[in-house]
Amino acid sequence: MDALIAQIVEKTGVSEEIAGTIVDMVIDNVKEQLPESMQGMVDSYLGGGGDAGGALGGGLGGMLGGLLKK
Image 1 (cartoon, rainbow, N blue to C red):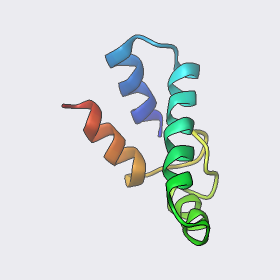
Image 2 (image 1 turned 135 degrees about the vertical axis):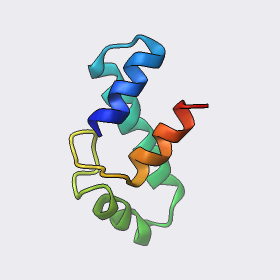
Image 3 (image 1 turned 90 degrees about the vertical axis):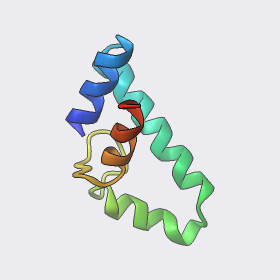
């Protein structure tokens, strides 16, 4: 997760706090697009926290990080 936030900070120049908020907003938006029965699976996949403080591992953080590299 920290690597994704660092990429956002590096590429955009925003603070770490703002970058974390951005990631939280994207995760929330993804969850809103899914059926309610799948939203808990997203939290589990992201490390149980469902926020930028959770451990994303390679999951959604890796996917979002890949978008920033383009």
